[in-house]
Image (cartoon, rainbow, N blue to C red; front, top):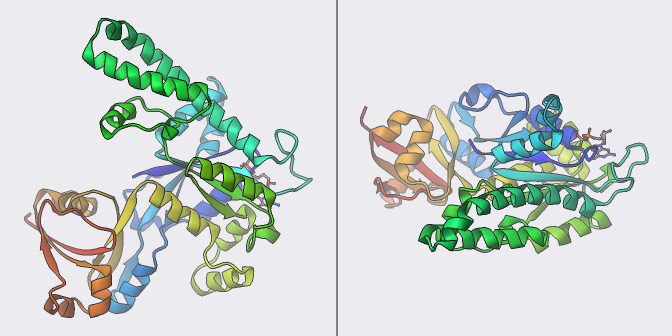
Length: 365
Ligand code: GDP
């Protein structure tokens, strides 16, 4: 499964946030294919459609889909002996698919800030620079390898050399790889370099308790928003301390607490949604009397591959998928009515599954 890594300087609230994630933790019995690792937190992906489908179908149980966060700080702490902390930190970031960068936007005299004062932009730049330097090293090594061949007019080497030079120039002016524009064709090659700064990123602004409902007066958050906008990234505002309190609650209790706080959705729920979208993930549903369930797939996947997420047999023996969109099913109220209205399609092997599709797979065993 795809995972988002939580990174940030010391004392910004990463552990507090990660504790909230594990506390909110999804019932792991439902997700046997998920990683069992103390540094991985599995959370349910909030989706109002699942609730609606449950009301329609009235199944015995309802199972949301899940998402994994990796606590990079935790891994680094555990592995700090031997090799430099810096290298470990970078190699762990290499393993995640997206980056959630936590920055400190709260004042608290009792909590030391590593650089002496609260300055989220300087925090962001410190870590980003570290990642850019690592990528510069990667690219320079590769340039060393292809340069000679490129000089001898080897077509492939020349093609790669041009891309590498473009990246090198960006890194030398402190730009991440994700800010460089490439054609789809070039991108295929760029992916093979396994760069850190090509990974999608979002920023998590950790604010104080009294700013959960409205952080518009917080200048640090404003600065983070401005910085993020310049690179097309999203900002999620959370109060990590309060998130750990929210994470202990469920259902009605949670809703009441959120109302008291004056917020619609917990910061953690917003973060899960944002990370999910950032990775290009989407949800399809299965809806039967036994269970209504949400499943995560990657946008662009075809029907057999999506069936394979449930079970490899479903993919191997795939025949076709009875498919109705969530909206059509909601409007028709029952599967039978949707069928009568001609809203249920029979889709084959080439069908590209859409977010919100309700699917019933037919397969040979
Ligand atoms: P990490 O080093 O980034 O993992 O930071 P921690 O999660 O350990 O937090 C560092 C300190 O900041 C701890 O004392 C936390 O209780 C405190 N802290 C974290 N989030 C908040 C917050 O939202 N508000 C306040 N006031 N303190 C926080």
